[in-house]
Every structure is written in C-alpha cells, then in structure tokens.
Amino acid sequence: MGTGFIVTAQTPAQVMAVNQNWVDLTLHRWANREELGQTLNRVPWLFSPEEVHSLFRLPIAERTGTWGLPSAPGARDSRRPKESIDTTAEIKLGTLHLTKKQLTQHSLISGVPGSGKTNTSLYLLETLWREHRIPWMVLEPAKTEYRGLKTVPSLQDDLLIFSLGDERVAPFRFNPFEVPPTINLDSHLGALIDLFSVSMSMWGPLPNVVEQLIIEAYKRKGFTSLGDNSQLKPPCFSDLAVLIPEIVPKLGYSQESTDEIFAAVSIRINKFCRGPLGKMLNTIESIPFDLLMASPVILEMSQITNTDDRAFVMGLILNRCYQYWTARRHEATGELKHLLLIEEAHNLLGNTPESGNKEQANPKGKAVKNFANMLAEVRGFGQGIAIAEQNPDGLVPDVMVNTNIKLAHRVVESKNREALSRSMLLTPQQEKSLASLGVGQMLYYIGGNPEPSLTSAPNFKDEATNGFNPRLTDTQINSFFQSFRDRYSSLYAPPIGCPTDPKLAFCIEQGTSLVQSLLEDPRYKLFKNNLILELLATPFGGNIANVRRVLGSILVEEVRTIFPLKRSKQPSIVRFLSSL
Figure (tube, rainbow, N blue to C red):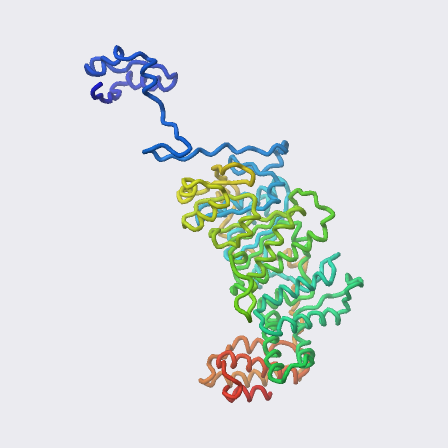
C-alpha cells in the first residue's frame, strides 16, 4: 500500500469537523482528498469496509501480557458485601466502602512518609466518631500528628489527649496492679508477672523474686484469690520497693548472691518509682479505663525515649484492653464497638524474637506475642485493630496474617513491596506500581476478594475544610487538658511515698554527700549520677539501715557493670560499698 502521512486540521471548520468525529463516531471529512496523495486516495477501491475491519483493532492484553506493550490487568470495581444494605453503616474511602463489621477483622495501613497514610487514618477515625459514634484509641509512639484532631468540630468537645512520660502537657495515670472488675486475681497476676518479668531484662532468679514481691504486696493489701477484692486499694511500685529488704534476705541464697539480687531487683523496681515513669505508673488510682474506652483518645508516647519502656507501657495498655473486653464477652455481637489504632507499629510489633540471650528476656518480643494472641481473640468482642506502618516487612508475620484489610499507599523499598505483595495477591506489575502511587492513592485488598483495587482517600488534612490543625503546641494541649485535670484532681496529687521522717531525710542527705564525693573521683566517672541520686530519694519504709544497704547495693551493681571481674579482683570500692 505504500506509505501514508498524517494531515492535521488547519482551519476552524476543520477543527470542528475533527471534534465532531469524536462526539458521534461518524466520519466528517475535514481535508481535501487531493491532499491525501495518490496512494491513500486509492484505498477505498482496494478494500471493502469488511476487509479493512479485519486489519484494525485496539490492542487487547492477554493474561500473559501483550508483546512490546507494557500492560497490567485493570482493577475490578469494588463490591459491597451482600449483607451491607444500610449504606449509613459504611465508612467510605473513595470507591472503597467498608462496613463496621469488616473493621473488627483488623486492618493494616502502610505507606512511606508523605504518601497519605496518616491522612487515611485521620479520615477513618473522624468518620467513625462523627457518623457512627464509635470510640477509638490511638497509640502514637513516635510523633504528635494526631493531636490536630482536637480542633475538628466533631471531636473538639470529646477527644482526650494524654502525653505519657511528659508531666508538663497532659499527664497520664495508670496503676498496673489495679485489678479490673470481674477479672480473677490469679488471672491478672499471671498476666502481670509475665509482662513484668520479660520487661525488666531479668536473669537467673530475678523473675521468681519479682513474682514473690508482687504476690506479697497483694497479700498485704488484703487481696485473696477467692474473696471480694473490689473495695481494696491495689498495691503500687513503692509497696514492692519497701518489701525488697525484707523478702530478698529470706530467699536462702549465699551472701554474695543475695547482694547481687538485692541490687538488681532494687534498680529494676525503683525505675518505676521515680521520674516521669514513676509519676505515671507509681500511683494508687488510674484514669478510669471505662472512660478511655468510651471516648476518642490519643496516647502520645514520644517522650518515653527508652524503647523497652515504651513497649512495656504499650503492652500494659493492650493487656488492659483485652481484660476490658474479656469482662464483657457476654455483650459480644460481632459489630464494631471500639477501634485501636497503633501508629508506627514496629515500635511494638517488630519482627523480634521473644528472648535475646539465655540471660535476658526481650520485652518487645513478649509484647508481640501478646498482641498476636489479642488479634486472634478480640475481634469477636467488637474490638477492631488498625496498624499503621511504613515498613511492613519489619512486622511480625502474625500481623500480616491476622489483618483482613490491607490499605497500601506508596511503598518504595523493595522488601516492603514484596511483603505486601505476598499478603495482597499483587501481580508483579501491581507490586511495582506501589512505588509510583500518588499522594492519597492506595491499593486495597480485603480477604476473600480475587484481587486488589485502586482508590484514594479525601484530603482530610485540609485545614480550611475540616478544621484539622497540625500545628497545635504543647501549651495548647495543656490548656485543653485543664478541665480533665480539674475533674480528676485526686489523680494528680503529689507522688505517694515522699519521705517525711527527719532521720530518713538526714540519712538521704548524708548519702547524697557521699555519692557526690565518689563521683568527683576521676577513677569512677562512669557512675551514673542521675540514677544514683534519684534512687537516694526513694522511700524504704523509714528504715535507715535499709536505705544504707540499698545505696551500697546499687553502687556495687553499678561498679560490677563497669568492672566485670571476679570478686577477688574487683576494685576496693566494691568491697567498701558492700560493707555499708
């Protein structure tokens, strides 16, 4: 047939004719036949329309693709579940319509920073409260992004924000020893001892020693396994600290082992009696957990800088959530009653073994195991869990298995894309496309669907539209918090156990002077000033001998950490301190 050429429209009339061709799909001539050349002018007489039709078609991709053309199967339209008839019971994310019941099967929201992951989470939370009055709780371990919800009209009167580990903003109060109503004491003890033991990096006999301290503390408060404990005040960490000098010497170990155990347990227990952790956890009363589960709540943990401490606190919250629903299992209907969102979940749910070495337990590994069990059990109670994570490959495999809804925003790193691909049935082309999704776009997959689909969430962070303020300061949050603090003023009284005995105060003063003189010695600059001085302010039942012994044992432990030698070769300071 020879060669041909393209003739473009040159005049307004020709442009109109070309546009009309696209409107009604008929041929409106817009160029002179003479301009086509002799070769193309012969075409109408060479072939009939039927013959030409067989030579031309749009490319149709086979399942294996089309040679020479990049192609990918189009995503199917999202389909609502058959049981979903009432559209008001749905949460809409673009073309994705989720039912409240589906959210009880748990969700994974992934994406790199700036991909729209947090925006999707914010939109989901605000919609749940505004349209369905479903309460939720956010565990935010690293940032303070969610506090901007406080200025959204639907949440400004109801949202509670707490700054865990930061007494200046919105302090939190939680007593781990408090036994929830209808929960058996032995059951609570088992969960508590298990969590405490692995969260204090214990070796040898230490877990058993701490267990005996906890059991004895409950006994002295009048708690029994079969009795009614509802009117009793629970113990706290200070109660355990007071028991150390009494319990440890009676355990039957050698004097050297007793000294080591005494020092090690003192350090671990007193850690929760002082500083921000002490103010938060060493309290008799807790913020009512029923209130926390009935309101939208944000728990900011960025000021708890130690990762093990943060994992421990998150584990306590998760365990209390589980106990809350266990006590209400008779009310379970399968419908969503509460959503727990964990932001940057690798802080708690990283793919970490339960133990580090033969002498050290791993608190994060234990928390992961507890959480995996919780995922499997709480869905029947109406507790939904959403996990927001930018590195899904770093999550424990149980999380990928037990989350039925996957919302994948832009993910660049290949290992993360591979992890999502395995759990979302992505084709190689779809896996590759995860790296080029726009802001707010996401591939979503719901268990039981044949393949993932593409959608996008509304821009919830648009301050002009929704009132979301990403720039709320600590001062503003503290101002919002004052009404709550006034309502629960008893929770924020001075710390319990402050020393009032003049003799005890004098001993502490003398001990402080001794420690300061030791710290000035250049040979012992490695002593941890803050640790020692804070421990000096810890009450030990008004017994001066106990204070002296604790002081000496703590310093012995510190020196042995610095100089890991046999007893006969340790510095003389160790032997001196042991005699205090």
